[in-house]
Amino acid sequence: MGRMHDINRETANLLSTAPDPGSAIPDLSFVIPAYNEAETITETLTRVSRKARRLVQHAEILVVDDGSTDETLSLVESGHWEVPVRLLRLSRNFGKEQAIMAGLRHAVGRAVVILDADLQEPLRYVDTMLEHYREGYEIVYAVRAHRDDESWLKRRCTATFYRFLNFGSDVPMPAGARDFRLMDRKVVDALCSLPESNRFMKGLYAWVGFRSLAIPVELQPRGGGSTKFSFPRLLKLGMTGLTAFTDWPLRMWTGIGMVLASLSILYGLFLAGRTLFLGHDVPGWSTLAVAIFFFSGIQLMSIGVLGEYLARVFSEVKGRPGYVIAENTTISAAPEC
Ligand code: UDP
Ligand code: MG
Image 1: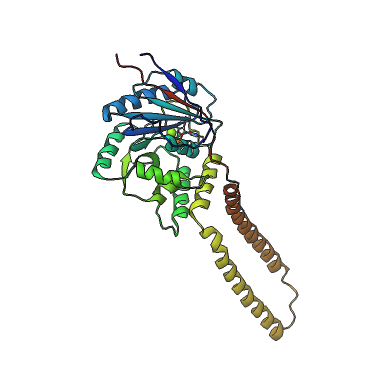
Image 2 (image 1 turned 135 degrees about the horizontal axis):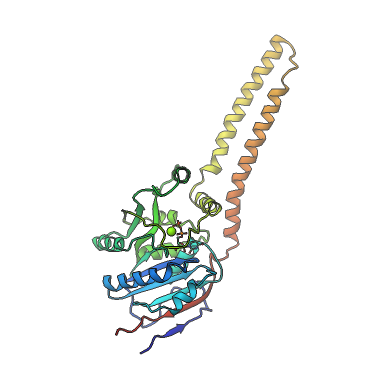
C-alpha cells in the first residue's frame, strides 16, 4: 500500500472537532504550530513521529501551518512520517495562540501534547510528562529551568508582566510556563468550550484548573530560523493577557479619583482659609499649570485603559472566529518496510 493523501476540505463547520468515524482513537496527539519553520519542521516531525511510535500504540501529529510563506507546508506534505500527520493550513497568519487552538480543536487523542516546531523543547520531557500523566496529573507543563539566554530587559519585562497579571487574581499564572505541555482530553475539551476568541493560552490553561504539575525544562537554542515574537507582538499578546485576566486596571481609577478628589477638597479648604486669614493671594499660576498637566495625564491614562478593555469587548462582540482553516489534509503514515 503506497502513501496516501486524503484531502478533506472542511466546509460545513470550520471549527468541527468530530473525529473520523471508525478510526481508532489515538492515545496521544501532538499539536505543533508552525509559522515559517522550513529549517526545522522536517527534523521536528521526524523526531516527534519516532518518539510517538515508541511511546504509545496510536499517535497522531497535527501540524498547524499558521500562514507560512516559506516551504513549511510542502515539506510537511511531501515527507514520510512514521505516524499519521494531519496538516491544518490556516488561511493566513493568526498567531501562535490561535494556531494552538485550531490544533486542539482538531486533536482527537486521549491526551494532547503541545510542542513548538523549532527543536527548542527536548522530546525526552514528553516521557516525563507521560509518566506524571499516568500518575494522575491532568496537566503536566514545562517551566523554563532558567532564563539565562534572555536579556536582562526581557527578564524584567516578563517579571513585571506576570506581577501585574497575578495581582488580585484568583488563579495564579506561573511565570516561565511554556505552551509545551501534556493535557488530558478533559482539559482540552474544557479549553475548547471557552467562547472567547482572543486568547491568552497561558492564562486559560491556569483558569481551567485540573490537577497540574510543573516540570523544569532546559531549553535548547533554536534549531534554525529565528523567533517569531518581536517586541510589538509580545506587547500585543501581553495586552490580550492583561485585559482577559485582570479588572483592577479598570477599577483602580475609582480609588485614584477618590483620593485625588479628597486631596483637592483639602487643598481648596486650605486655599480658602489662607485667603480669608492672610488676604488675597494672586500668585499661584504655576500650581494651576502643574495641576492641569497632572490631571490631564491621569485622565488620558484612565481613558486609555478603558480603551484597551473596550477594544477587547468590541473584538469579542463581533463574534469572528479566532482563525479560518483553509485546508485540512491527512497524510497517512508511511507503510512499514
Ligand atoms: N508560531 C506560530 N505562529 C506565529 C508565531 C509563532 O505558529 O505567529 C509558532 C512557531 O512556528 C513555533 C512556536 O510558535 O513553532 C514558537 O515560536 P517561537 O519559537 O518564535 O517563539 P519563542 O520560542 O521565541 O518564544
Ligand atoms: Mg522557540
